[in-house]
Image (tube, rainbow, N blue to C red):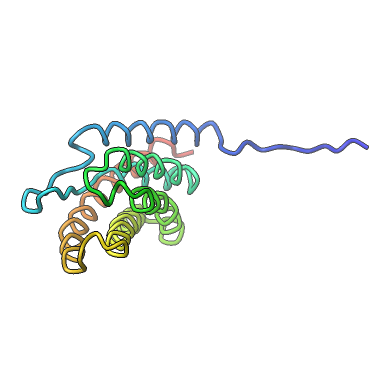
Length: 175
């Protein structure tokens, strides 16, 4: 007896293209000062814009593509490891993998790219800083200070950029 099984590719061509393009942008950001912006008053602390391609990937192509681009972000953070806590793969990679998933579901729930950008950015900030504190790298007071300064700046920048890029993308690909 012959079974007629139809197979579906894991990712569509459009999803693979989006994953490749936004992963390349994430890699380029990791190699330039645009990906990790130093905060002058906090020596050795950087605000990141690398979560932005992850959020965009998840909104336009789904949570799996967001997970792939987030993993690229996490691996680049691990390989760059400018602090001992980022040499820990749990801190460097795991929260970054979750950015695309939370951003995707926030977008599905709200239909707002700005809400998705905020959710994805907070996933990164809260995830990384919670793990840094949990592993005992920094005291709570320092972690909360970084969250207030970095988190606020990253949420604002992310909401503005993601909102504009997703709006342009939706306009270009409107059926």
